[in-house]
Structure formats: structure tokens, C-alpha cells
Length: 439
Ligand SMILES: [Zn+2]
Ligand SMILES: [Zn+2]
Image 1 (tube, protein in one colour):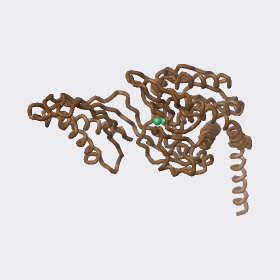
Image 2 (cartoon, helix red, strand yellow; image 1 turned 120 degrees about the horizontal axis):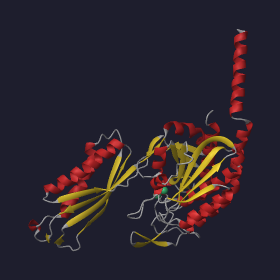
Image 3 (cartoon, rainbow, N blue to C red; image 1 turned 135 degrees about the horizontal axis):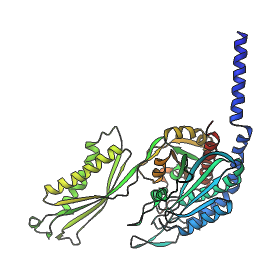
Image 4 (cartoon, protein in one colour; image 1 turned 180 degrees about the vertical axis):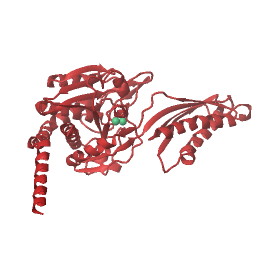
């Protein structure tokens, strides 16, 4: 009996020693050091964010932003690759201790949105987007992402001797989609070797969110953001006088029938208990005078899905439905799917479970994210290696998140007190991942 108890005590002791050696006191201290360093760089990070906010650049045009990033990384001793996927920057830092490679990603592009926020550093920038002049604004918070990763780069470089492995930073252009006819974004970065020599074992990214109060972090295992596919439908009818529709084929009435018919695919043909999906027609162009029935109508839309099977099914039914409805009215419909869709962001389940305690430690409050029908091309990085993409609250505590202007709004406004939460989260995730790898 006593022997048994003694051996239990011995085991506990060994276990204790074992845990102690896997996570030595210095590893705990490192967490405190990271927090101190994060606090020390907070002011500089906010300055970077304001500077980038005031000088936003559209996708594949992030020349100033990427120069700022590259210069910063070079000063810190990173091996820097520039012009990856046009304006992308890859920075590599080998730590003083052996360990795996982890990739951290920030997107750099702004949106063709004219800023309506009253801030001293509000954007007044204008640029051409697909042939039209437009205001340019960091309306999705990518300015914050760049500033956070620049600050993380500096804290990591300062702890280089303690870093057990290699950190690869990915500053990515053109997340928000591409000017017509151009290639870019995460897919082009991968094509141009962003994940080669060295290949990361895991990839992490974050997005600031207006839907969460400052201090809150949210994440979800599995599919968290939708895949998106874009399409165009052209209905070819036959022109006639608006007073004599029987002499032609009206593409507007047929187009309107198609818009409604497409809404019945998800509601009537997909098992609603399995996977959600959204189909939206956002463009409907036809005609130029009230009493002329035109030759054709053109529609453009987007499909959001979380599952490959559902995506393929709905894409097929959109084409079949548009063609059949057009035929019923004596017209023809041509459906074109753009080749450049985004796949869903799928957080690796094991990786997500592994990093959840870290996020919990950093956030004031950690919650499970609902699925988001928005898309993100972080998905392509997370398809190559296990990935985790999480959300960081940037809505000031005095504003209810449902009243805050959402990402992409001209009134999108970041509470900068949320930035340090993102910085600490990405730093702790990185060091915890690298420290615990192999144990
Ligand atoms: Zn966006
Ligand atoms: Zn975004």
C-alpha cells in the first residue's frame, strides 16, 4: 500500500520534472518578455498603421507599402525576397535554436472605397480601378494587418536567440481581388515559391473585425469563411419596340425570371441542414430607354459555399436553370464562371485545438466564430499546409458591434486599442507553436 503510494508520488514528481523540462522556466519568462516587447512597440505599430492608412494602395499596386515593409525587415536582419507576386514581400528569420518553420501572413491591399471617416489621417487618395477613378481606403483593415506583422517581425527579431525554429513572414498583395485581366494574391505568391525553401509546417493569419469588441478574439475549427465564385449571365433576346413586345424576345423579363429562379436552388434543392450557401446577383444591366426592349441583358453574381460538393452542385444548377428559363421564353442564356474563385478558409482542426489555449490566454474573451460568408484567399495557404485564421475585435467598447460600420464600409473605423491584442496573439501563437513542436 505504502509502496504504491510512494510510487505514485515518484511518478507525479517525474511528471512534474518532465513538464518542467519541456517548458522550462525560461519559456514562461519568454511569454512575459513578449508581452513587454509588444507593449513597448504598440505606439510605433499604431504610427505605422496610420501612415499606411493615409497612403492606401489598391491590389497589385502596393508599391509604397511593400517598400516600407521590405526596408523594415532588412534592418531587422531578415532574409528578404521582394516582388513576389508583383508587390509581395517574403521575410525569413532563422532562430538561434533548431525547430520547425512557421509562416505568418498579412495582406496589404486597400479597396476602391472613398473614405467617410473623420480622422486626421483619413485617406484622400484617388486611383484608377478598372478604368474608373475612385477613392481608395483601407476599409478592410489590412493597414492594421501590415502594422501588426511589422511589429511582430521586430519582437521576433529581438528574441532571435530564443526562437526555436524559423519564421517566414508573408506580406501579400491583392487579397481583395484583382484588376481585370491581372493575376495576383495568395495563389500567385504560392506559384512564385512563397512556400518553397523553406516550406512552412503551419501558417497563421488574422483579420480585424468590426463585429467584435476590442479585446475579443474569435476562431473556429474547420470551414470558417466561404469559398466564392463569380459568374456572368448574358441573356440574348431580340430587340423590339416597348409597345410591341410580341415582335421580339424580351431579355429583361427573362432575366428577371432567372434571378428569381436562381434563388430557389439553395432553398429548394440543397439539404438546408447540411451546408449553408448564398447566391447574389449584384449587377443587372439592360436597355437604355424606357420604350425600347433591348437585344440583351447582362447579370453578374457571386456564389458563397463552404463545401466542395455543394459548390459544384449549385454551379451546375445555375447554368442549367439560366439556360432552361431563357429557352422557355425563346431566348438564349450564356453562363460564364470566372476561373479565379476563392476556396473556403478551412482551419486545420488539430492545429486549431492545439492553439486554442494560447488564444485563450491572450484574449480578454475568446469566442467561437460563426461561419462567415465573406471570402479570404488565406484559404490557398491553408490548403498547402495546416492553417489557422482567427479574428481580432477592433470595435470600441462604447459601440455595439452590430451598430459599427462593417469591414468594406466607407465608415469602417478601427479602435486601435485592438491592435495589440492581435500582435500578442500572433506572437504567442508563433512562440508556443515553435516551442512545443516535437514535445
Ligand atoms: Zn476585405
Ligand atoms: Zn480583408
